[in-house]
Length: 82
Image 1: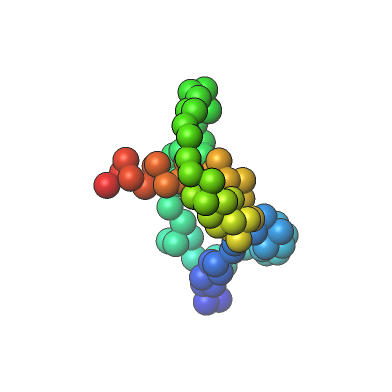
Image 2: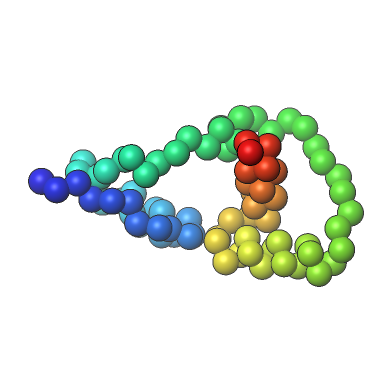
């Protein structure tokens, strides 16, 4: 049986549909750990942003099917990892 690669998913619905099938021949080398999502969220951040930037953040998050706070968290995590 040839291993299948993981398709790109941009919404929760796509991920749920993907996980509902037989994944026994899935090539898991594409998966990367997401430490930011596994940690409890106990610290708060409060900041002011220009309205157009906030609108852009919300629009990009909507395109990916995720909450805008998660998108901001991902950006912070990426910056810190560099």
